[in-house]
Image 1: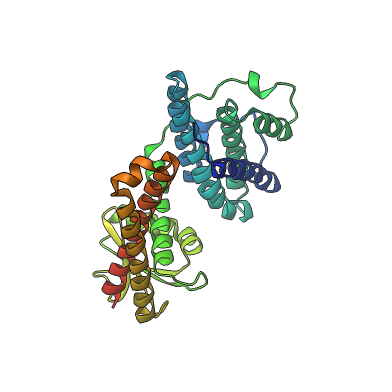
Image 2 (image 1 turned 120 degrees about the vertical axis):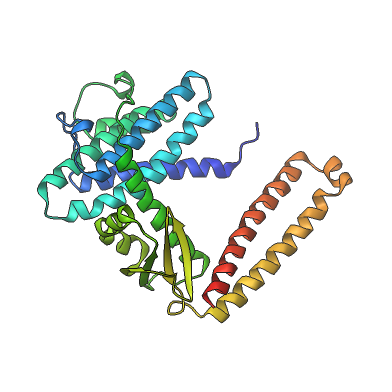
Length: 316
């Protein structure tokens, strides 16, 4: 079995991410509440993460029972890294710093519950760190390896759809900013076209989070997309980010054209090697596999550059 050392580094980073998430939670008063029950949670963000936790528990359990351990590990990796660390804890920050004590108490109890259930699910794959975190976060005599396996009964699809919509919107705006080389400190208005009542409500409800997470200064409805704007489709609505005030479109176009040319040149070089039957037959299989992997990476990179170029052309 080929084992890339970079994967080991990646899993070390995952362990660090989990450890830091636990420390962040502790610093914000997160503590196990024996009375906490998922079905009694009132906050939308709580009901969203509990729904995703339930889905993850179900998928991991099914994968382990059918001996698809790589799928179980991958599902857990995505849940803990992407949903818990990157989004859930980030969305809790305003609640932890706010003055609504009832909301804060629920967020603290729910975060403790989610982290403990994550430790249980991760335990078969990383027993030592999860056992340490389990003991560290609460004074109890029971070992994690003796705890009950997580159940998967809770579901609130409305809450899940709402927060996943928010994540898709912010991710799309961040991606557009990154592709267009927009400076991190630059802010611009967000123009929303074609939003129905549900989307308009969500925009108002999550306005503070959208502004903070996507570097938006205001959210404004409109009948048509303004000229010179990157457009991101989320559901039925189109979110438009005006680029004229954020970047020099001419300079950005030249930068992307240069990057496209360089990427296509590299793809042509690798394509010729992979198209050479003698090279494929005589080269070390690992070298051939690495070249194919690199070609696939370049394809993704080229598609991203072309999307960015299309946005520049639309903005111009």
